[in-house]
Image 1: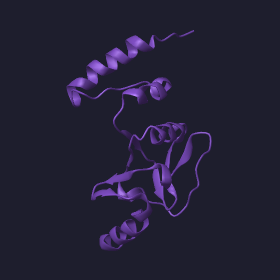
Image 2: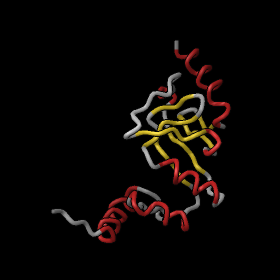
Image 3: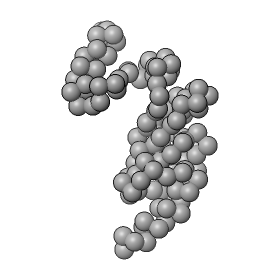
Image 4: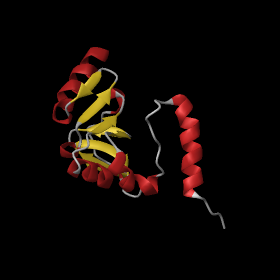
Length: 130
């Protein structure tokens, strides 16, 4: 059996990441993210895909996003505009949809966008790529 000391693990991750990120940034293991919201100013999630109703994210992200929203912490999804999809098909064992109403903004290579306006923006960007 494998045991992992999460405190030691978090400390080591923080040491490594301090060299790469801002001094005030912190990394939290997935299991302690809910507790981490008490000391958080903003949440960022990476998206597997973007669609009209939200973003496809790792399972468990929507719970954290809802908690953040209740605490008035902004929630941003980071993704390339190439990740836009008209379909919402996901593997429910791994992914879920983070609804637009739980997202403050979507950060893409062309700026930060309101989730409700993302469809128009993606449509414009796809037209200009051709």
